[in-house]
Amino acid sequence: MRTHRSNEKLTAAATELADWFTDIVRLWSSVYFDWSTSAAHRDAAILEILSRNAKMILEAPLDSHGNLYKPLTLALTASCLRHGVAPTAKHWLAALQNVLEVRSRVASADAQQFALPFSTAASLFKDLFCEALVHAGVTDRPTILVEENRRASLGLALNWGLRFLLAYALEIRPARSRGRGTRDLRWVHSLIGAQPT
Image 1 (cartoon, rainbow, N blue to C red):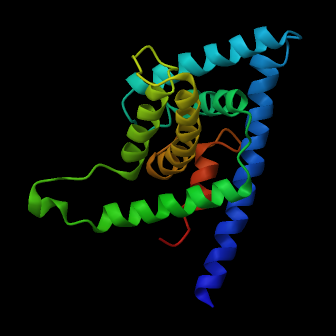
Image 2 (tube, rainbow, N blue to C red; image 1 turned 60 degrees about the horizontal axis):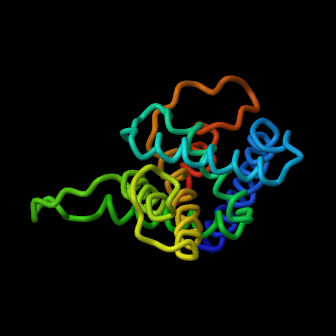
């Protein structure tokens, strides 16, 4: 019974996350991409925003204040538009389950006895996200992959990026939300932070 209730909570959270991210994609698209009537200009803008924010994330340290929130949502939005996909509640549910599982494993890992300290779940997912962005050829670092494999790497980056976003939200100590109804990282944290691990 408890597991069933937990699954229902996770599914409900995933549905809210999908709606939230759809609104973020709509917001960033209206600001950066939808003003051009030229498909070529729009594609160039998407690649520019993706590249600029991917490089920022690659170079920035993992912080506890939410400084990566804006570049991360921009990079994810541009990745979705470039790849032609929109994460559904099903994708968010898989990401949420994966993040909670990894957090649990990291917390219980007895790595200290081997002098192999683990990082946090957010840092693990950030590393995977950044590596996939490099292989996708959207940073200033070289990639050896051909175009078809770069596209697959961008899809993988989106996969890791969703997980990084969730793990990051769980690990930061953001300032208070800007006001009632603000759906920011603090909101994500409150939505998924009470989930059982």
